[in-house]
Image (cartoon, rainbow, N blue to C red; front, side, top):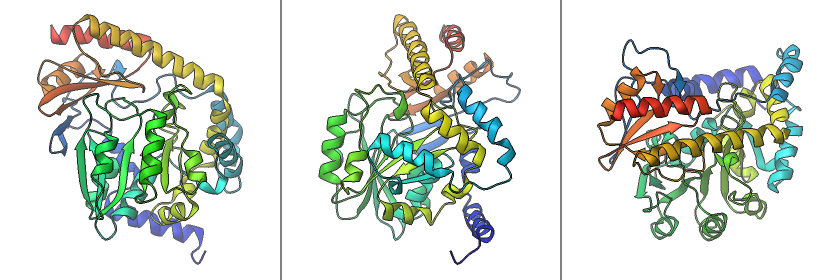
Length: 387
């Protein structure tokens, strides 16, 4: 490298700070704000915490893992704390090898980062360069899309299907020469819906030779093996697919910050130009991530507890006459019968943090899945608010 590590980090951090797009801004955006956040023409999102709101009894607004990190990850942090004065270098090797072996790729197909937000930022800047169109369906996770417009791209969004899933045939039919990237979120956020592995593989095989396909798989670890697409084999075959993953969800690393992308080495090199990526991952987080990735018992436990609490909440809402969109993640979305802002304010007043949004004029609640106790609090408060 022509720059020293210190100067390189300084230059890159100053650059992202000047744009107001570093990952800390993303984290800060998760803090409830008084104004509504308009994300696109037909979706308005509200995260309202009125002044003087009591401390939350149930924090169900950020899709975090309420069970925390694995005991093995905690031990790894303690054991590696004395190395906290060092940068991580060769220590990435073991985790990359574990991921590569599981996904059917080579370690050079993997780029680590502090969460997947950095990968979304890098893709936004890379593919928006010089203009062009990002093609997707909405409502979905907006981070990459909003950043793409800041960097000069146009976002073309199609509606989800009537089952609230990405409409892959419609996306394929809408591809034009100016489309530079197709963006898919699976499982989708905020709907929690998924695409079948066969459907998604067929789509990628047809589209990726012509247009890169970016698949945000933040919630992929909540899926059972039968529901989980294994697209690494397509990357290994040379297709231009980018998979973004995070440890923030089932691994509970929302505050520790660890994620990765799986893609062609040349694509990862291009994306790395815009972010610190591996240079920004602490050695303690990396060691914790390596331990957590191998701790299948903890992941199975988190997956089972999430499903149990989710099923309980779905039944409670269904018994009250509400229709919940079938979710495969650690949150759920369902239409409500009162104004979004008023509903949100009253739930926060009860100490229950949730999100609301209006989709095509219909108010919806998106609630993260907490512990059984927290979901009991949610249901009780919901009954009080809606009468």
